[in-house]
Amino acid sequence: MCGMPQEPPVRSTSPRPYARPDASMSLLTNVMDHSLDDGYAEAAARKKAAGGGGMPRTLRARLGLAAGLVLAALVVTVGAAQARVAAPALAKEREELIDRIDRETEAADELESDVEELRGEVDARRRAALKQSGGGERMELMGILSGATEVQGPGVRLVVDDAKDSRAGGDADPRGTSGFSDTGRVRDRDMQRVVNGLWESGAEAVSINGQRLTALSAIRAAGDAILVDNRPLVPPYTVLAVGDGKNLSARFQNSADGLYLHALQENFGIRTAISVEDDLRLPAAPSVTVRTARPSTESAQPRTEKGTS
Image (cartoon, rainbow, N blue to C red; front, side, top):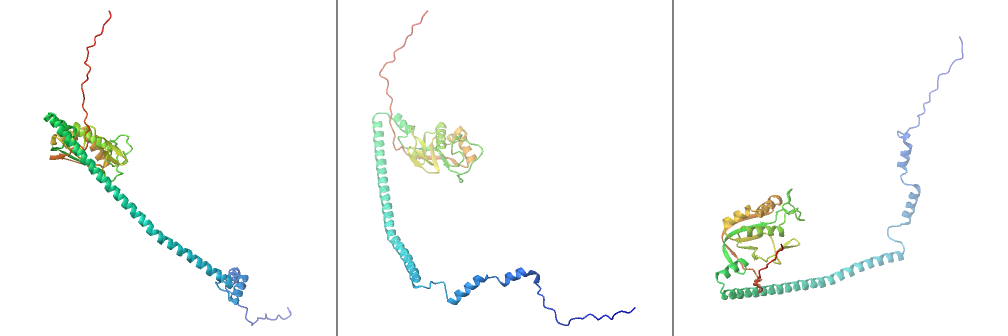
């Protein structure tokens, strides 16, 4: 079989154009090569060519900026000067107020001292008058029981103090429905029960923090403070009771009020300490109101009733 002769394929010897490795990522390549928009680039070039900076180019703008800076500095300077002028005046007023408080406090203390002195003088004259009336030992006993005279003898020392943690509490509530049942603070009703328990246990005379109690004494509360005859007391509360020390201590601790105090200690952390003392000295009450009873002038007439048959 004959055919036409075939020419061999022609192979080009010229090199092929170079292909970029990232040719398939043309979009990312364009973003990287042209990160700044052409319009922004032209504007930056014009500004650079014109020599523009951060400061205003015109004289009016520069004067305005300088005036603003001067005004701001003036405002700051005036404010500092006013504060410097007002500071001595405020300090002077504060010192005058402190001096006035100190003077008034000293005057109140002097008046309180005068009142105490006059009370002592009145009590001394009252006791002298009672002795002259011929009461003898009976009147002396009445003075001791009423708190009109100072007493000395054996007894019991009872110290009652707030809990270390004033928020201490427990499941039991020996204070009933008191609004202070969730705290470890000693309250007026607690001290009332303590004093009444000592009286019932055989105490002949009682005082709290040096304040002698009488049959007319009142233990009240004013906020968080405890008042005894309108005089505020601060914890710890030291209660002195004159009587038969050992028996008085045992009777009180076994009484309902002693158990109440023990419950406060167990459930609320209130701190208590009781001890028997051989020699206690209780002052006289600062003011004793003398009240006497008089026999009725009307004679009691026997009453007869008529019955019916």
